[in-house]
Length: 258
Image (cartoon, rainbow, N blue to C red; front, top):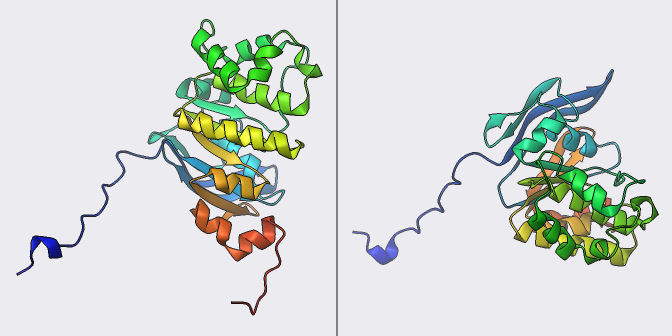
């Protein structure tokens, strides 16, 4: 007879409901060139998920498809279990998706404050609490609120691009190469702020060439190769994988090593 102490521990409870974001068998093409060939991934509410891969692997295409900028030839984009593929990007903002594109793309002739207000265009007027949140996360932007955004440094423009997306009250924030072209100290600051944004309740799906930084921030990761998912797993597992370390961290793998 099995005693109470001998019983197997109860399994952890199953996740409640569908993932926040699910991409199913996405096929996306630019003319005759197929950029995604059956990509599938999930992002749970509250997670940070990193999307890694070489240039041309399909990372930016995946984000653009998730945010409605591209329509898949085949496959599905689901938000809270409901299909949203085919809904245009400016309409998907209403569903709680924010997208920080590669290259910042701030409005260069508008002030910092005007850029931030543009991020809240779906609302009748910007929420002062959201503006306070952005200025608390990015004190530099508070100091430069009247400055023309085209005169900001690259790091400040990246902060502005993230802050502008936050003004739309996203539940899910998609970020495409937030560290690109920035000095190491600024990169560290950006990733610390992303950690805080996630801690405040915003889910993150992050495309990033800096694999070490991305995986230290992330809960899980996916690796794309030529439009398909080649690897996936917990972030710590991926960070210690010799293939990841050789491909993205510049380490040499000893084929006969221990």
